[in-house]
Image (cartoon, rainbow, N blue to C red):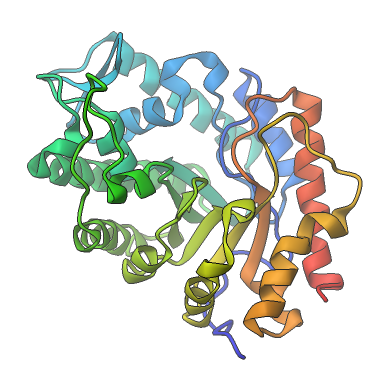
Length: 345
């Protein structure tokens, strides 16, 4: 079976990357580590230890255009006007971008930029009156539009700061399966928000992707979801350029859906190093890549194409580890990426 590897690659063959958070509070230190250890596909670090404003949702709030958020006891809420919490989030983001500007001076190549996707945002954010934004179709539309516009400004700023970069945009959607299955709980916790139709999910993601992909300096856009039951068909329908997932959560029943993605030229960021349940075993890189090499074999794809299509990553964020532990995981991912090129069988 062949694959469409003729499509312009998003990253070099044998690449490794990060997918989420890192430990520590120093953006310069984190950015240097990323560019030192992941030279083929570095990412803009996320450092949640600095507080709520530096988490996935806090950063996304800083990026949303003309849709301010504020931190409440129950979490982030949409509000009429910006306040202290949003100013703090924006200040932290500026520090991250300043660190990237210094560390990536003269850099030419792909940089992965992650932001919470529109459906996870809708499932996390509350409306001013206290209901989940996900419960209001108009609110989900406004969120998607504000994210698209804010992300365009964010990427424009990044392009000015690192003019030699090509940006790979990652929408973090850990709650997407719950959105589609009707498992997102209301703020009271006593009921759930009705499931969102797959067609609407695809439509909103496709519109966002089309707008962002058209920007100067953007190499491609995809979705990362580290939850079970990743909706591969919906992401395919939305026209994503890549899909990131935790390979330990894939089932054989999803083989055909993965195969359809790959045949269509969609790249994969494979979470091959476990990040839950303590520090992972990093003794055998061949064992690390076995889930994806076995999948490749079942699908009947040629082994030499594996390293072109698949980039290696941790399964999820590394904020729960120490700095040295996070560096060890990242280095292991880099070795695993090389194995997929040098000895993929």
